[in-house]
Length: 71
Length: 219
Image (tube, rainbow over all chains, first blue to last red; front, side):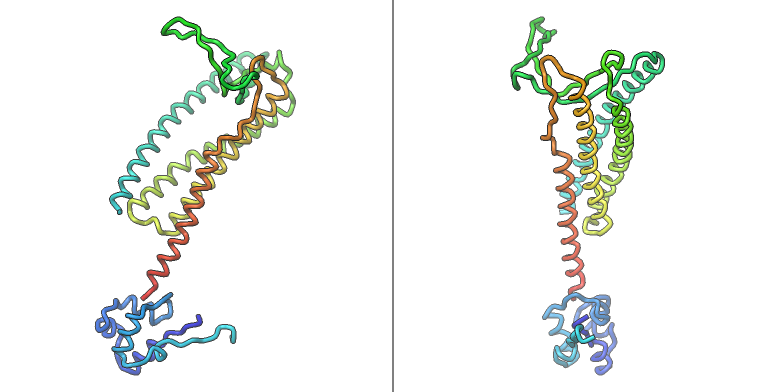
């Protein structure tokens, strides 16, 4: 997949669990898990904003582009 | 919206059951007639009646009413015209072509295929209706069933056309009617049209499922 979600890395840096983060940003743990495992097809700006606000980071810290053609 | 779907499904089911019951009686009549005909032929081996089902048109043109019959209500003679008829041919009077046996064999096989399809179709149909009432239309399993209905309708149309065509070709070779000419009517595309519309619906639902999956996976 071209866009890699590094949510688990940021969560580990901020020492916050999935359940706690999901409660704070009002998203179900199931949906957050889908995002964390890279199965999500799209992310809303409102969700990205809520995550970045909570984890005190930039969107680039959560999302990373990897060119598949290089592999 | 679910209530509307349920009402439509109920109406559809009621109409479908009505049509199936009517067809069973119609089919039953045909079966009994075929059985009686077969039994009579088996008892009297010297006669061999072959039946052909053909569409006809008056030689003078449509609405020329070449035939006459009596209106039993008034006792008056009325003019009439047929467009669809069954012809019974006695092989002792009319030599039948040898390939007729092969074509009859093919028609029997096709009839068995149609019978299997007609038995399978109600199960498919009610399964789709059940999925619709439970709000499970946008699932791959339901879409596959809708596709199968489409294919069955198209196969039925093709088999019907082949059977009519076979009777038409044989009739043209051995029969010439006094007031009518035998025609092959290409205009009845209803089952083909229904089948194609059903397949189109399945494709549209596939796109809907893709959009739904994307929506579900949008966090």
